[in-house]
Image (cartoon, rainbow, N blue to C red; front, top):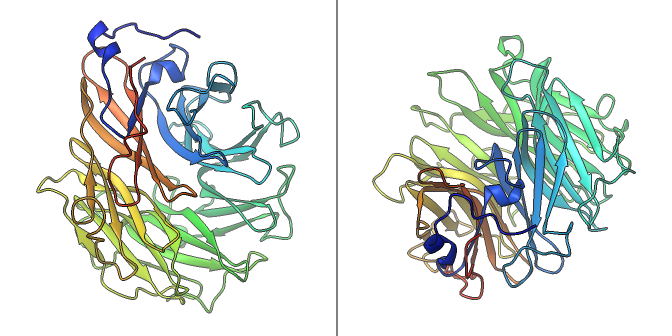
Length: 422
């Protein structure tokens, strides 16, 4: 496929991006069908340190792979982008790569519409084709549910988390190699947890965020509780046994903890979980225009007050995704209007002053764009930090998928950048 320059001036096409930055037009991802992504981007890095980035538009999933030289990899699906038509109103929320280099994505269809919502898991081959040995033509669906995250356990089983709409509850499903439910887990392969029971509805209630697996193969789930407009949201953790039974020795409420963390205005909106080296856990996200980090002990109880960080004096700030590096330092990425930001915390919860500028990296906004927002983050085997997000364009131009690469100390990696724009 040739470069799509419709709506882009010759000067913009010649423009170089800032150091450490690669950007690609959404219209390139989706073959000219659209200039705006409906969801994503989400990001993973493969065994050769090549980033894979996925977005959706309408019923289409688009997955791009880049070379080490920051170009679309033409060896992947012909033009560097695999495009799969799945279902209308499609969204993607997480990506993983298994030990056989197959690519797994989780998301939803009709999650915000009035039609029946479905949680969707897609498995693609390493060449970007639907894996016909998985589910039905590479796709597994769960009715009346939406998907949030996917984790691969030590046995290679897929732990998929999200939200059940009927009944309203956090949902965790375990799938086997072929995509069939693992019936040794929970009831029929799934477990559900509703913090507020019958008070919850299809639009208000508990959902499962990201998941970690501990050394005993127990499943620890980040909880996100939306209590309705004007009510502070809650965050917390739940723990299930390897067989999918709620572990009543964990948390403050017989298997789980859920609270506003003492943040009364909007409560705590978490966007991820990581395991800490001392056996505890950390979640990060956004609250009332700030980034927040909350640490929990090994029993699922808050071990300190939440750490709140203002990057600037602006209100439109907060974390959208998180991860941890091999040293146990937590990275939280998100918005710092009008651009994106990445924060790194030490294991004690304090900002890591050896990272970027006193613990905070704030990106340079791209030329010809209005805003930039970070949506996902990962750390590769060499300790480099990868951040993806979306830059909204000015005028009629296409929005742009952005991929940043930072060195371990939070500086833009000058070996990673776009020389020209598509």
